[in-house]
Image (cartoon, rainbow, N blue to C red; front, side, top):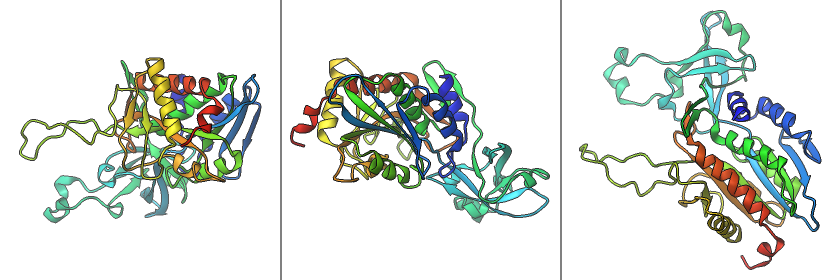
Length: 351
C-alpha cells in the first residue's frame, strides 16, 4: 500500500513518465537479472526462475496516466494557461478541478465561467476546451512552461475495503508487477514491461513486445466498472444494468475481447481454470469497447498469444478512481497462481 500510494501520487502523464519510472527502477534493480530503459522510456526487466526449459512470459503494466498539457499562456500577469487533453477525459466534468502542474507540482485549478453567470444559451451546451483555462495565479506563471504536463490533485484515501485516488489506472498493475518480480515462479522466465504512452495509443507496448519477443503475454490493467444503478427517464425505480462491463467486489476481470484484441482462448481458459481450482473470485469482462496494451502486443513479430487481466474500478479517467482492495488482492493472487501453473503444453494445443 505504501508503494501504491507513492506511485499514484507521482505525475506521469503520457510522454513524461519519469517520476513513476524512477520509483519502478528503485524497486526492481536490486532483484531483476537484467533491467534496461529503451528509447521510448519503457522499463524492461528480466528475471529467470530456477527451473529448466523456462516459458518466456511477458507481463505488462502501463506507467502513464491521463492528464493535461500546457499549450499557451493567455496573459503574462494573470496565470491563465490554455491546455490540451492527454488521453480520454470528459471535458464537461473538469470545471473547478484542482490540479498540479509540472515537475515542481505547481498548484492550480481548471477554471470556467460560473453557471449562475452564464447565459441561457451557454447553459444549453457542454463545456469545450476553449471555455476552460488552467489558473495557477499571478507569480506562479513564471514557473509553468509550454509542454508541461498537469495531473489531478487527488488524495490517497482508504475507506475499509475501498480505495480512492487518481491514476489507479494503471498504478495497480505497476505495483502488482513489481511484487511479481520479487516472487517469480521457477517454471518461467518473467519479462516485465512497465510501458509508456498506453493512454495515447498503446505506443510503448508495441516497442516493448517487439524487443522482448515473448512466447506468451499477460497484461495487467484497470477496467471500468459500469455497475452504477440505471434510472428510467421518468425517475421510476432503477432498472437492471445489463451492460455492466464489470462489478466491484466480484474479483479480477478476464478479457475475452475488446475493441483492440481477441484474447487467446487458451490463456483465457488457463486463467479461468486457475481461478476455479484455487477458489479465487473472477469475472468475465463483457466484450466491447476499450482496450489495453494487449492490442499492440499480440500482433508483434509472428503473433504473441495474449490475454488481459484487470482490476475493476469506478470513475476511470477522472480525478478520483474507486476500487475494492479485495479485487486488487485477488488480481495479484490470480496472476501469481496462473504463472506458477503455466506450462509449454498450454500453447501447444490448438487455439
